[in-house]
Length: 81
Image (cartoon, rainbow, N blue to C red; front, side, top):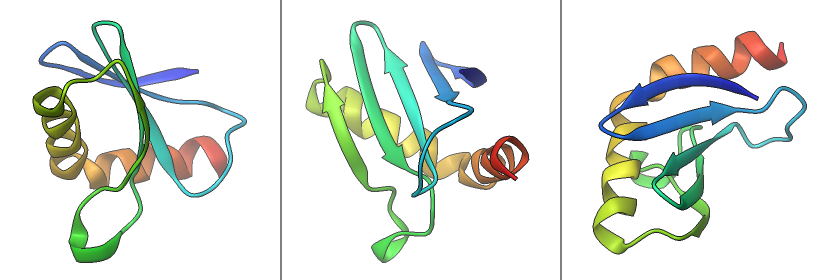
């Protein structure tokens, strides 16, 4: 597991031996969300799963992924080849 970003209390992680689609695990307080970082429908990151998140915090996590998507995709490619 590699922490690729920390911002506003969120910790964004990409696992070394993870599976497609390109996604990040976003941790916040007691919650974890898996968010697709590939170009999705309408350009919005798709939440693959979320546990322990309220609606507002999940929206903030999606916004963080949207804002940093290029960097996250670059990290995914670097880690997974």
